[in-house]
Length: 212
Image (cartoon, rainbow, N blue to C red):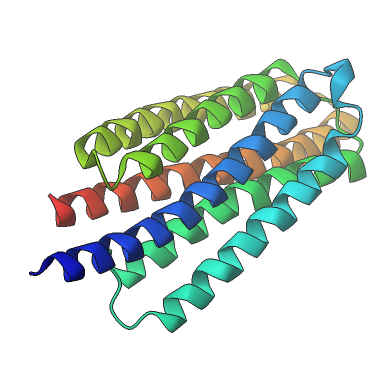
């Protein structure tokens, strides 16, 4: 492979990795806002609207990425892997906004379980973001960040089971049962968010395997 071909390949790889990095950054920023909102940070008064804006920003980056996939005949990373990784990163923020919107509509207050789960998901999303940034130059480091994200996702799954178990133990009358189902719906959004982290970590692992 000549120098010109190598340079061209690196340009393409940088383009897709940069778009995934930008998407990851918007997602992490959105989840940081979610965490501040959950912890009732006084500086997060307009966090819900800001999360919606971050979701829109991330959606726009994904649209550009998909357009670039259509316009690029040969992609440096597997086309399907790029698409799926972008999808799972996108879904993290979608579920974040759905959780906030659901809590407002169902009039659910934040509880310690939610705060713990959101914090771990934010940390996991940061690991995914770091993994994407390391893909080109340090793929094995990227794999390590993906592994850390998976471990954090496992903690969220454990917290989810504990939270749901405690909910049902507390339900003693009809009103409490309704509260249980409303709150469980929110927990499910958080668990779905964590599952997107897990899926993104798996795709990153596959990408690293292919390029090393």
